[in-house]
Image 1 (tube, helix red, strand yellow):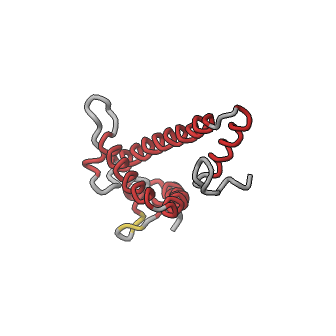
Image 2 (cartoon, rainbow, N blue to C red):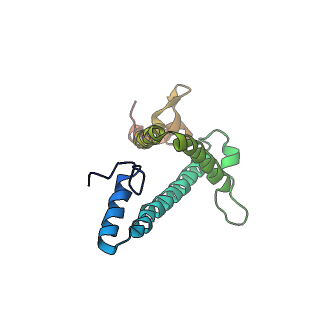
Image 3 (spheres, one colour):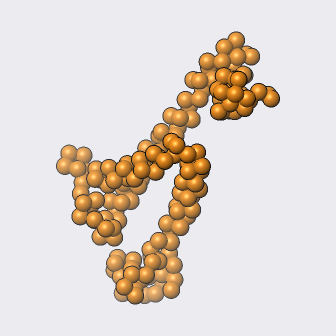
Length: 161
């Protein structure tokens, strides 16, 4: 187990997990190539996770644009003629994801930073409607809950004044 991160092993010292799998497969079956096949399982899982995240982000962009809450809402709220899906919103989310991924190729620390920032942004996004816009609660006025009283208005913004 001391050789997991040395540069003279099968992975060149780059991946301790793959090297561990390699040694287990080589010890049990005589060849470590089963570790390569096993390494693709999390890659496939990450692909489907990224795909579902992209779809969910496109749906949220479409929903906010449909309600007029996004800059460029006229473009992002359009649905595809055949599929009736928010194609423009999906392309924007794919472009933004690509812009985040490209620096990760050259810097491993950037990937960790983007991952941590995504967790924080997801947590903060639930309170995003509490942003003041033109000295009024933006979401309360925008979505027409001002006439129902203070409790539904505060509940709709996720933050009381």
